[in-house]
Length: 180
Image: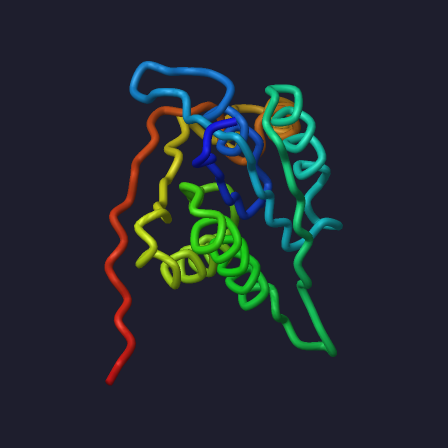
């Protein structure tokens, strides 16, 4: 393996195509991404409807090392999901970019808005390494756009909330500076 691995952190929602297709197929407007290792951050395994297991299997079948990290949704009756996604993303960036000196790319499209925001903040804490970057996977369409309930359900099971990949957009984060 190369000295600098290509590592991706993917907070997981009800998605399959946005997680798997960037690594396993190429499209008209984007190039297949390289991944040596993918960290799936799963905030709600009970509510994941097996998208976590399905994505893990597809990535492993593509020859990619996969680590699954389950984060707490609640603790002592308090909702801590956002904080835990941020903490886990920051810890993975510390481990992979700061200590391991690997290139880390964070997918901000495969989770809920709050979890994507949390992952972005967690990653921005380590952008000074020059090894952390962010991307968004634009889908071709959405499962709920299907005309019948049966087709919507079938599309949801096969693809998740979104269908296919139209483009991958790299996002330039704004630097975060600590106040004096």
